[in-house]
Amino acid sequence: MVDWSLAASTGALLVRGGPVVDREEAEEAVAELRDLTSEAEGHVRELTGLGLDLPLLPAEVVDRPGWVRSAAAGLDALTGRALPEAQGGPLAPVLAGGAGVQTGLVLAFLASRVLGQYDPFGGPDRTGQLVLVAPNVVAAQRAMDVPGHDFRLWVCLHECTHRLQFTAVTWLRDYFADEVERLIGGLAGRDADGLSDLVGRLPDTIKQIGKGKAGGAGLAELLQSPGERAVFDRLLALSTLLEGHADFVMDAVGPQVVPSVELIRSRFTARRKGGGLIDRVLRSLLGVDAKLRQYEQGAKFTKHVVDAVGMDGFNAVWTSPNTLPTRAEIGDPAAWVRRLHG
Image 1: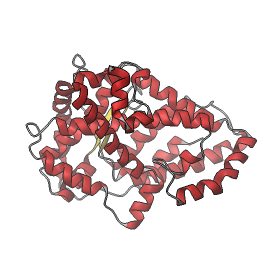
Image 2 (image 1 turned 90 degrees about the vertical axis):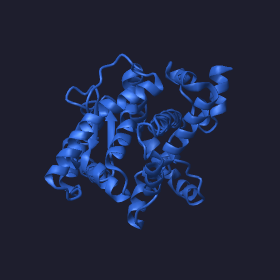
Image 3 (image 1 turned 180 degrees about the vertical axis):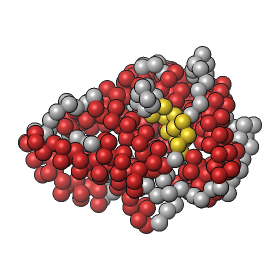
Image 4 (image 1 turned 135 degrees about the horizontal axis):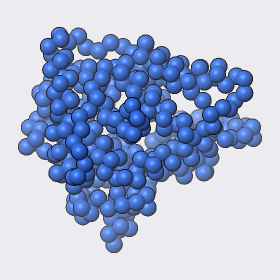
């Protein structure tokens, strides 16, 4: 469906350059980001109790084109298992190329905003890779005028939490991949009648969006079949949990480790909501604004549960897929506490 090689080359070609940084400052930022990941993950392990016996590993520090190539490779690994090797007939290469160019444009837009990520399907062996985007970390720190060391460590705390979620919770990676496979497989498997039904529902869907009833995911969600919606709900609940848990942890590690954490959080939250009109429209179309709501909702869920039953009680969430919160429970964490802890 997507020529990922073309997506990577297109995105890397079109991505905007980073901030102007002298060589010494750039080398210092890269070295510190690489070193801080081990320190950050140690703090996360101490707070959460996850992955205490795992090796402490550094991150891969990249520039914006490097992130594009890494993201494209990870997405290729994740989505490739959901689709047969050959489909679409003689026009398949043309369609995949067009999709690759469009995806490259999206990756180029996102590449100037992403500070880092843990990709459970990234890396040379596709078993997981933590990536930090040095120019974006430097640009964000400068724009917010916050202490450089504190901000870099704070970013590493978030991304190392994601790495622990997927490495300490051994079933999570395959569960996530299986759910994505179900969702993509359902979308790709629609026959002509299914596509006709989708098109027929489009006008009503647009009206729903106009009335503010699109929910957190907008057009894509409203166009789903009931079966696709069930899978989507599970994926949305999971991603909200993962992002919110990481946001909670990066702040909960506390002022003892990041003295300026309150200043960083307040300015970072304001920065997330900013941007010009075109930027806000693009963020909305690409689902970035929905992603930002996930941070807030997931952090509220995590805080409520930790306050109610402690970190050990919260960690029951990682027992199996059956102990993950549902989409409804993300908005009603007390219901999850009652289900798991009586």
